[in-house]
Amino acid sequence: MNKTAKTLNHLVEALNDGIDFHQHAAKETSHPGYRELFQRMAALKGRIAVDLKSEIAHQGVEPDQDGTWLGSIRKGYADLKASLKKDSDAAYIATLEEQEDRVLEAFRDALDAGQPVRVRELAARHLPEVQQMHDQMRALKKAKAA
Image (cartoon, rainbow, N blue to C red; front, top):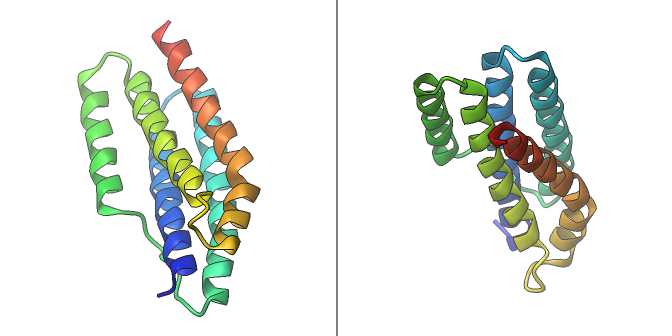
């Protein structure tokens, strides 16, 4: 697997973890506004992943379809935290914000000068959306803590 495909697959895995977790949190919350936000973020991550998978396939490599085992563990941990807290939404929001940190870091790392040009182009194209999702979740976490 070439470096472009490998790096893009890493981004896809991070996005897939986020998609899975946002969809799960949307099912678990009873707050309609949070449900809509989580579903919207999952859909946006899905659109970004489709774009990256297209380039991976163009590179002659099969794109990853799943997230990571660590993402599954984090989702389970969020379920545990939610079951122990009075405000389960706060637990999901805090863990989703951590997930957004990981996705944002992965996209920023993909902008590194040592990365292939195509990786940097795709990361730069989607970074504003990734940053916006991160900022929204961070603001929601702060609002829940206030």
